[in-house]
Image (cartoon, rainbow, N blue to C red; front, side, top):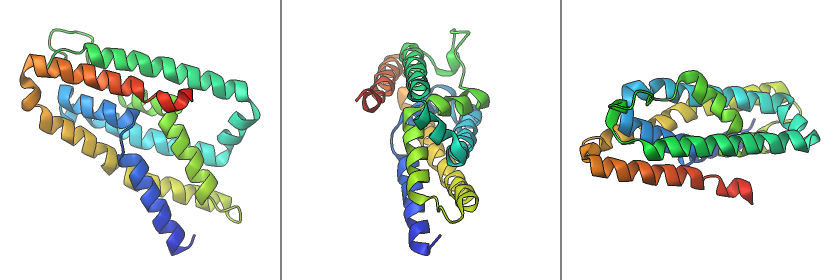
Length: 198
């Protein structure tokens, strides 16, 4: 991979990892509601889960989905339904750390890693990265390099959102502000489905 291609890949990984999307909105909300430390498993699940999915796409899963459009459609529907469920849970959260809501908790590592497989933005990022930056002359090496680059860039990027959420905890300690913040985050998370519906 040439230096120019590597720089372009780094820029692509950074821009797609730091911009708003389902993962980053959920991490922002988790940072607000549960704090940075309790959100770490969620952050690691996003970072590692995405790299695993990215490698799988580079090694052929993307071709399988192209060959079987019904499977791709089913994945999109499952992802959309799950995203709406998460948006509802976020919108209904009313207190920090779950408060008296016994079932409120941050997303676990495995839940966050599994979510990557139904996250529309993650699929677009993975398929585009492999289509544009994988080198047919050395496919395995380039797939691993792309995964490594995303692994190095993605985790610090998504952690920024959880950190920003943590910084907002003081301002949102007022129950009314927290209520409206969570409602807004739930609506924004549901709105991330719009590109998938086009």
